[in-house]
Length: 162
Image 1 (cartoon, one colour):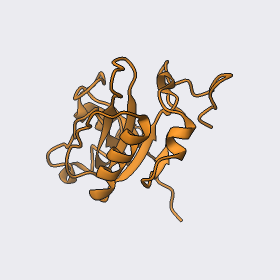
Image 2 (cartoon, rainbow, N blue to C red; image 1 turned 45 degrees about the vertical axis):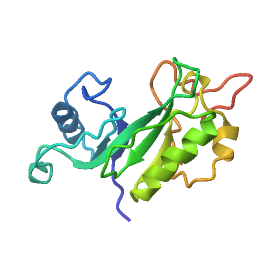
Image 3 (spheres, helix red, strand yellow; image 1 turned 180 degrees about the horizontal axis):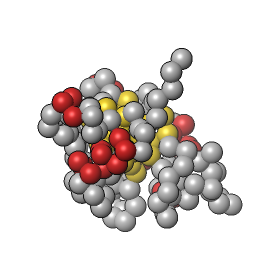
């Protein structure tokens, strides 16, 4: 079985990244990636003529990182990756993380996309119970994220992402 190298969580200047979508796509191609999802926050980054640029870009899969905020909390956010989407998914307002997860994952699944919980320990925003009590089909969750607030290793009160 062939193995493919890819990234399903990458940002550009279309949200909080520091490089243009074209530059990011070219970097992944130059570094041996077979595919990448440009998963900007609440934005579907689709490059024109992607199929015609296979020599300079890897396979570009449309995606989005849906940023969900719970009612009454401004700073922290739950991030759900939508992979292979055809339309932007706008989050609503939710009373609980589980409600937010179920709504967004349901919208991703309706587009036949794949849903991923991104950096689940980011700012301690989502718990294992939030994920466990979700009723929608979640395809994956991120094990490691390099953001300084990702808290990959857990704490005395929270499990590690591993």
